[in-house]
Image 1 (cartoon, rainbow, N blue to C red):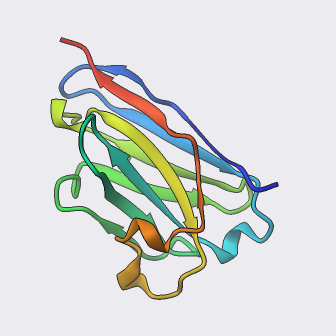
Image 2: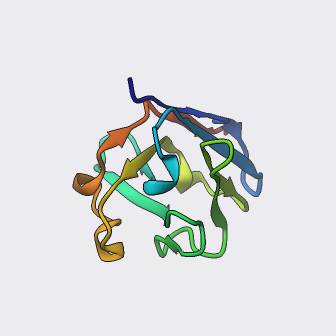
Image 3: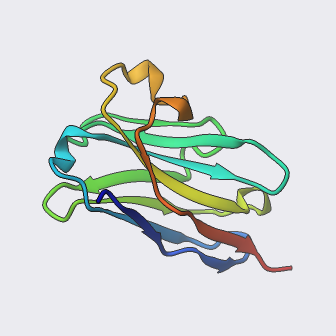
Length: 126
């Protein structure tokens, strides 16, 4: 049974850093491109970042570029999202997802992903 399990969410303040992890029980994990999406209350699920099978190519939403870094460890079947300089608008449930789609231009589209995790919450404290 395929499982993607996110962890690392929590309560943060402006300027904080947080690292999310996603452990995948995927056979041939290195065959999948991986992505991170987020969904704020009352909003649609938005693309955050994606990474190619080898990790050589990464892509980011404009809103997080320069602050977030996606990476993967194929030996551990894990993908990470390092989030720095966090802002209140980063508050959301963060999901990792796996796709077999080869077209990098499609990785922004949540419909292109085959498997999803349950999400981990990132919340700003006032």
